[in-house]
Length: 179
Image (cartoon, rainbow, N blue to C red; front, side, top):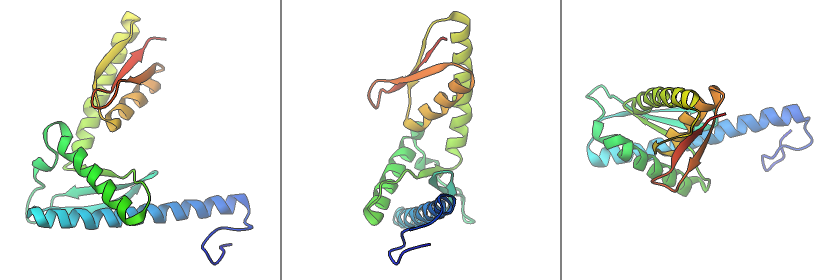
């Protein structure tokens, strides 16, 4: 049962949890709407084509700039090694925070770059995991963004090994440890 303030009160734990999930989804949808408005304005100012799709993916809003009917999403929105994409994502998160007052963990996807990068990272991780298992020595990988490190950490854990992040951005990297 909701109070006039919209809080859940005197509700069984299972119902409260269900209500909390619905509330969280509504918050993420709101984040997505704010982000889409910001990005739409940005694309208009830059005179770039692209449609914006908004979704909720797990515990974060997922915003995608996809090809419009008029043309293709410019690859320059991704930039070398995804640097422009990362900067746009951070600006979008800041715009959402300014509007909602809440820190955002939204994920921005442009031209399928993250899916391609994820595949490359999984392959990199598999090669490094095999090297660590064979040699019994630790292996340091190249510096990576938080998204990239998460992909590799997940792959290492799935292989039964342990990994750690070391260093400070922009030189933060993963070290895969033998068992």
